[in-house]
Image (cartoon, rainbow, N blue to C red):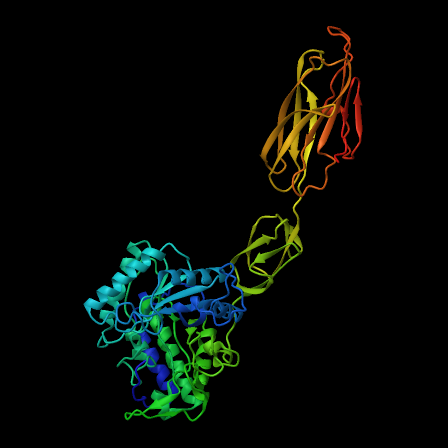
Length: 594
């Protein structure tokens, strides 16, 4: 905003109001319909680099696992806690001052900024913080080419990105038509590339114009500073930066004048939406600078100074921004969108580090608005594990999708989630829709290791001495993780054969077979034992073996066999070591492993 002498205030507000109506009456009826937009309220001033700066190393991130929260994340969380849903992230203009104060553009940093916004459910305004980047065709071509690269990388990204191609256009000789030409080129390029995000076009008076005596956008003629563009998607916001600098308004520095200036900006915004057909999103605003600077370089403070520096204010100009915020908030049928300035870690006002104007007791906490719906999320866990985000209390804008991950300790598993005391399945990642306050608990329990011999049987119903028969064995994994173990077949405690079961899945079973050769065996009773070797961590060994007692007859070829096998359906298992089940000539025994 370029300082200029202040206009002599109208003798009455009525005259100003009538003039505003007269300008409005000249606008064609066909453009009075304004497209609907989301409601956006928030703060700007965070530099792109701030998602790699960590002024507070005690706050864990809820966006990036195993990191501390960056300055930008801490600020974004603060904005949401205030009942707001928008953050403006700025970077230096690539074509005119690429290493400027707002920090160089970096696609990785922008990706991190988008992740922060997406995690919190925020709208994120991506601000190319330039001024002279469309002042001629050469730099304008650079500007358009730069944005082509950004759109290539992020057109398909998070849906709540809002592009702000230029911060405060200047050096255009007051030519809003030329400015509109550049913005139209940007829109055409973006839509051709498939980008569907909202974008912002800025009023010429945001930096300074000759349309109003003050040089600002606080008179009816300021609507002519809005560029005229079209968009097939209708996703365009118009913006006007609104301040009451002591350097401009010193001649009439009181609350009445502050209210008049606020109303003038308000009417410019309203008339601009009617003229263009697009909704407003004023991406900067605040009290404004607190000093008046003379031609010899000396400066004096406003007489009612409260705080100096980037987040400073005077009693008069905070009354201005309070009034403007109230006017925007009360507008019907939908409040007017605003994003005030500055909130970032660079403010030099005492006591405002990290948060700028929304630090405790700073001016951003002294204005009032109707907070947007937010919901709290409490996360906790039982012993045996943690979560991401960490245990704690968090705030999200209404409707945000939040992912909470369970992180079991060694030897533990997630048994279940509880959400407001309701049990939920034990999925590693819990997805929550923040439509109400929620209290989430991760329930962990020790991992169970348990393999079992579930059944043994002989393939032949008649066991004939001197011949081979097949032992059929079913084993099952009753534990919580896949297991590898040995299954061994014994005859009267002598090992006959062994097989390895590889990676048997949870609750899965497997059938293995062993050959029992009875050649040379004397008639009598034989104990055929099948044992599943204990796996690491297994404590319940009662089900690790089954024994089949088989009587070999003294002769073969009889039609009245003296030996038969049992079926699972005729045996009773109670899970106790030493229990025996008998059927005719065969016996199943589960023996205690030692």
